[in-house]
Length: 65
Image (cartoon, rainbow, N blue to C red; front, side, top):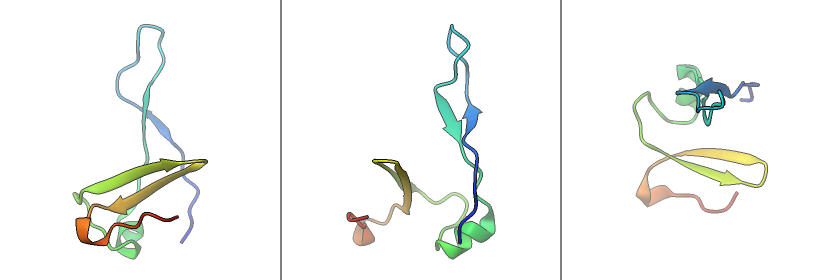
């Protein structure tokens, strides 16, 4: 499943009026496909040109992408 998303500004602006955080909305049908539920803890990995969100299951952590 692939859906185009927008990184929406989030949180307070700094003294220059700039945001430093974003959020992304992930629908429950997308979570179902990923085997996740609302409220699950996740690992967020940042790689060259990628943001990877993975369920925070210490027994099943993937390191190679």
